[in-house]
Length: 268
Image 1 (cartoon, helix red, strand yellow):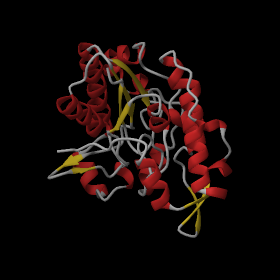
Image 2 (image 1 turned 90 degrees about the vertical axis):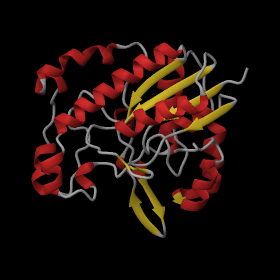
Image 3 (image 1 turned 180 degrees about the horizontal axis):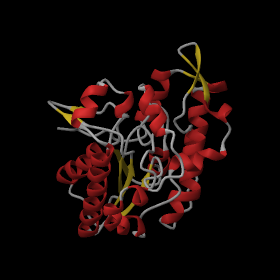
Image 4 (image 1 turned 60 degrees about the vertical axis):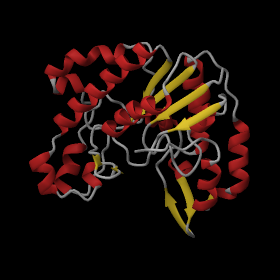
């Protein structure tokens, strides 16, 4: 029977260079990557549901979800619109104030996570969940183009359930044995700022997405052991480095290589 891996998330799952999903996916006969840059937790949850409708998950399948942050708002018109952090998106400050709230973003996300856990348990598949940032931090994404919101987001050492006591009933979803920690962002704090420097389009930039090396080490040290697997996918990293040497990343070359490592979804 074919061993399939299905992965879900945002740009920490599907980027223009290899991510944890690609390294872990190399251990399976098929890897279907449903991640998308900018995806929020509504998009991730509904992708999981749609993928099951399309592929009929079974006991031979493994599902890994990497949840995004609370500060995102996804929209579906004739396709998914996933602008990422709402405070750095095209949504105006006035629109956000009228139609969105961090409390609502948190509540929706916790419901998506809870529902996803129930679905995956009912389907009798192997599964795990991780997160981009610490979901116990109500303000996981600290960046904003709005000056007044930047000050608000800089608050630290806040706990989700201290800030919103009525949400303590959701504590059980974090105690689930299939919830993996640390979050990928926290894992990457061990690296230096210089590790995120790249030359792209003939311009030196700091890209705060985890690098392929960081993804590989998180996969080897955190994700694979959860499933009792020893993972060595360093050949993927070596091949990518041979294409993007000396930290000079050609976006098209890197993207083409990364896309060759998994099966892209045929979305509605």
